[in-house]
Structure formats: structure tokens, C-alpha cells
Image (cartoon, rainbow, N blue to C red):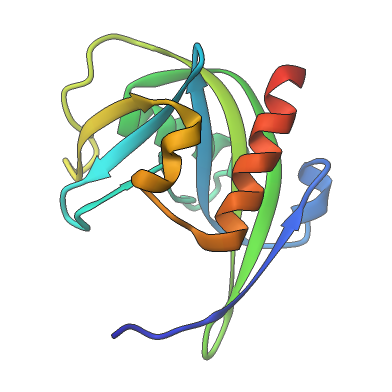
Amino acid sequence: MGLVYDVVYRDMASEKDIENKKVSAVHALCFYRDKLVIVYSERKGIWTPPGGGVEDGETAGEATIREIKEEANMKVIKHRFIGFQDIYETDKVVTQTRSVCIVEPYGDFIADPDDGEITEIKLIDPKDYQQYFNWGEIGDRIMQRALELLPTL
């Protein structure tokens, strides 16, 4: 069994809410038409929204756009941060953002060109997300907020 860390999630109004934090990872709830985009990680054996690490010199917004392109071969049309979480590990605090996006495909998906970890994407009904990934109460809040803000994009 893995380690269990305290996680504190907060809704955010703008990027200013994280301007003094070092964001290390991003995930985005991406919508193409009325479907949610999810990706399958072969290495981890899980379905998840597109996301990954923030590279040196990259903003959280830039990382979100890059990760969506790499993992799902999708272009971000509109993007909005919806929240962030601080994960309190033994010796550090790891900050990750959550976003909502409207996307469209660049073309057919083949595989994640970065490292081949993502091997499949699916477009699912958003109400079915827990059949693929379940992030507990925090995940439910993130999905609720994404669906609330999606019409404002």
C-alpha cells in the first residue's frame, strides 16, 4: 500500500491565486463538443484527464496546453483554471492545478509522442467519469466546477 498524504484543494478565480506557488503538475478536464476527453496511461494502467509535469521555465498554463497536445493530440481553444491542490508530502508541499478546457483534435490520435506512456484516448459522457477515474470528494468538486464554468468559456 502506498503512502497517504494530506491534500487541500481550493477553487481559484484566476492565475493570480497561484502566482507565489511553484506548480509542479497540471491536469485538465477537456471537452470536445459535449464529451470529456480522457487518456489511458499504459505504464500506470489508469484512465485520467490529460496532464503532467511542469517543465523548467514553463507556466502552469503553458504546461496545460503542451500536455493536452502531447497526450491527446488536441488543440486548446479555450482554457480556464478552476482550482489547485497542495499535497503535503513528508518533506515538501507539491502544488498542482486543475483546469477546464474546450479542445479540438489536431488529427487522429496515435500515441503520446513524448514518451509513449499514453496509448489511448476516449471521449466519454462527463456523467460517467467515475467509471474511469475517481478522485473522491475533491474530484467530484473539480468536475462540478468544470461543468459550472464550461458554459462561460
